[in-house]
Image (cartoon, rainbow, N blue to C red; front, side):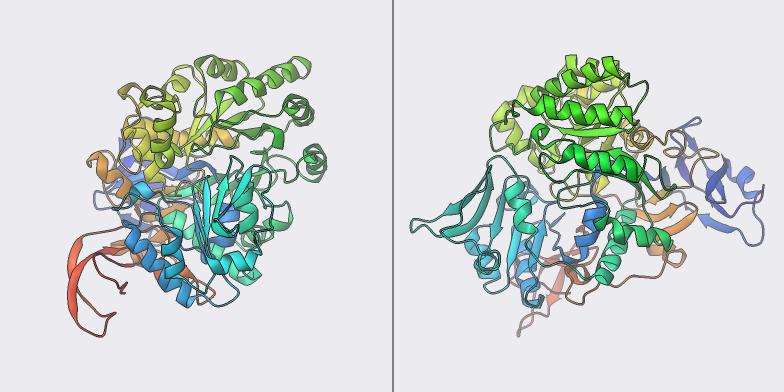
Length: 600
């Protein structure tokens, strides 16, 4: 019963019985025992790593049921993240500074994770502001699912002119003279946004390796130890999996990934899945990197893009026929599957197909689920339950809730999505973010949304009945998500025999004021018994720091998610004159307020 690692003097939230214990021990990458300090410290030997948590709260490692870390990792080092930045003025200063640093032909890319409602100014940037900040370096700024701003240099780089036609479902805005302004609109199809992004340069293979490692460590910073990768546009299998596959072979992954295969071309979906079912199978891999199934794109005709600023789109009449052939093939081959579905109307039509296939080839416990389900009806939740399915929910409404309430009204917003009803009916529910192109990857924003029912901007959406208590929300982000990768009983709890994945938090998740939940971070994260992230008093236990490459990477200067700290008055060193101004220290630098500089 000797232990490799012991954590003691802690408030350990087990997600099991008992709910809280003082200590745990780890052996060979798994939890060996939980109990009192006295009981667990008896398992110490001379070479055991003993971690005194100093009374801090310890939670099971968080598991995002739906995000895009494989694609996100390939691009992380290129992206200027506005996640958590407190003001538009700061965001534009960051943009200006990064534009001056970025060499040709590279772009400055702001890719999701922010909303204008997080800014003190409560507004979006203008094209004039973006062009003033970056007159010469191409700039691409993505806002949710609805728009992209391209500065003049980016328009030239992608080759859009007055003669460029609008793609299906998208619009290139033109001025009175017929020239493109730089504003691209999804109406309602986001393909125009993502296809334009795909025109930009990529990182080298070595930089992609570095970028993916840094992104995983950024996720570890927030206590994320697992994620289910939902695939994504322009993420081709197996080509775009080479980087994460090498990191897996080299033992350099710090987040466990179960990945779904996402078809890429309309009318070729069945051919993709027929090829993939011969090439691999669900469960192929190990606890760190494994195939999970098909989706979230199964057929393009079933993709109901969720630009809340546009009316709900109706799916094409061919949806049922195309979806049926794919579902029939997947069920026949016992492949779990997931489907992106925002609106109840789409879900109704998909369930009609599923029920038909189930009558021909019974699902018989096959794990399948919908993603998102913001407007799903009670009747359709019942149908999901009857077919043995689950629902992965994400906090996209925390970023788009203001738009949703304006279009559909306060009453509908109170149960968007209706999580409480899902739980009452016993449907498996897993929590997540859908990061990184809309919501931020910060899980505590999602937990805050589940608990308070509020958007990032502070708008209260949920009724009291649809809100989760803190223990419920944590279970959705841990035990709940384990169902969606068929890993129930393997992860999600701090219990003997489960994977030794946990995080020591910066504050007491269960006791701090609700508004402080979104500011939580991990101070020490363990995956498989190995410390993968540590800061502050625990920093000596952590891995060596990683330096972002290439040398112009925005991550070097700003890091990822910005966590403003304590306001302070500091001397400004960015001007040729000395003066003092109000500033806020963040995780990776100094957020200046009320001054034209951005100092470090």
